[in-house]
Length: 130
Image 1: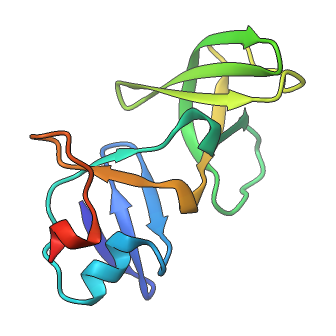
Image 2 (image 1 turned 90 degrees about the vertical axis):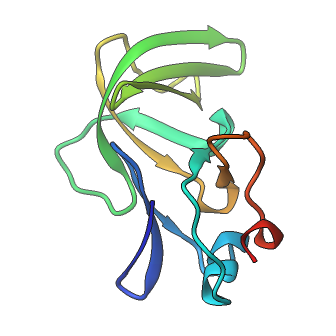
């Protein structure tokens, strides 16, 4: 679901809140009066930063996720975490110390957000929202 807050467009899911950059094609379509469909948010693992949870509040990092698997594969470690009952996979540097059941914080690369029609799986583009 999309909503306007603080002069910006935001995506809100069951366990995630993400600002949509003004130049993103979905934000442009909304500014031009396009309809906002129900969507599924997609982000590739290398576009999700993850780190151990901290007590400091850092802008842009989201909290409340528990690690369910760490998988070192050479130059990266895949970190799977539970977010509201959904498994999310991020890739991290092997130096990041995260273990199973650790609480983590994560951040999506705002320039790498993809939105999909949950019924068809088709990617939502500016043209599809017109």
